Image 1 (spheres, helix red, strand yellow):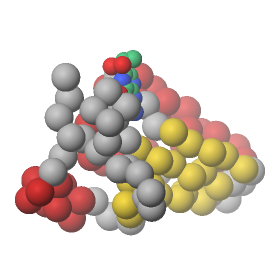
Image 2: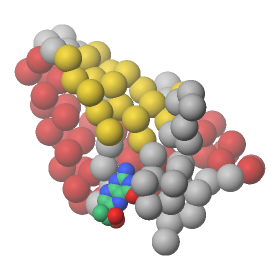
Image 3: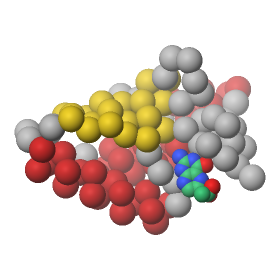
Image 4: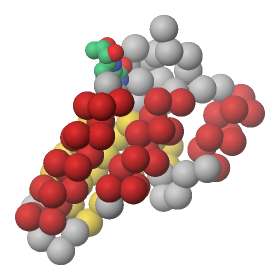
Length: 95
Ligand code: HBI
């Protein structure tokens, strides 16, 4: 069972991220990525998909042409966990 991030640990984890914001109305974080075109965006999504599969932790995302809106939350925990923080860092590295 994955634990939800709470209190100081949660604040510290959120502060370690760049450009990720808490999502209104749910225990999740989100970030929007923009690329030059669809091909670049799809390449990024492919890299993220492989990293997510390795981590066994998956993003919620929405893509239109060169834009990808990503939301991270741990369904097994019912909210934000350390797994989302790890995936956010992998996603940033794939950008
Ligand atoms: N991805 N975001 C997210 N949250 C989960 O709880 C999760 C996941 N990917 C795989 C996964 N859980 C597995 O542990 C199974 O629950 C399918």
